[in-house]
Image 1 (cartoon, helix red, strand yellow):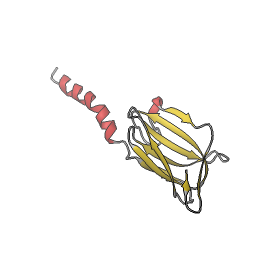
Image 2 (tube, one colour):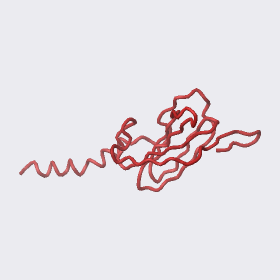
Image 3 (cartoon, one colour):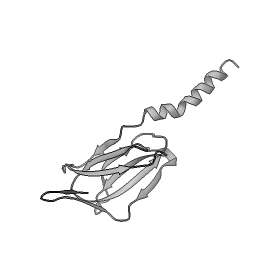
Image 4 (tube, rainbow, N blue to C red):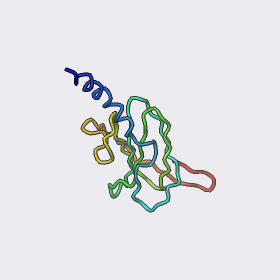
Length: 124
């Protein structure tokens, strides 16, 4: 019986421990030599965190990913070009490989986004 309060405290601390391991908002990884110079900006509701993946629509390979903390402003610099955007969402971060575990929800934009720089403007 004397271990019961300790066990209850450990269980109550589990979500807080998962929170501490969440990455800061920003670039998780980048696998392209293209210069990342154009802004992708996102603001989300505070109910979940997200990982935004940019994928080459022709090769279907992800070239970079950024972590978005729920409720926070997110700005990621991306390379010029046309990119398919996929978003993994969830509450408890489990790492780059597992994302949010079996509760990961996926969303994919129906059309690729085009990022380009003009003579006086940058568009994303």
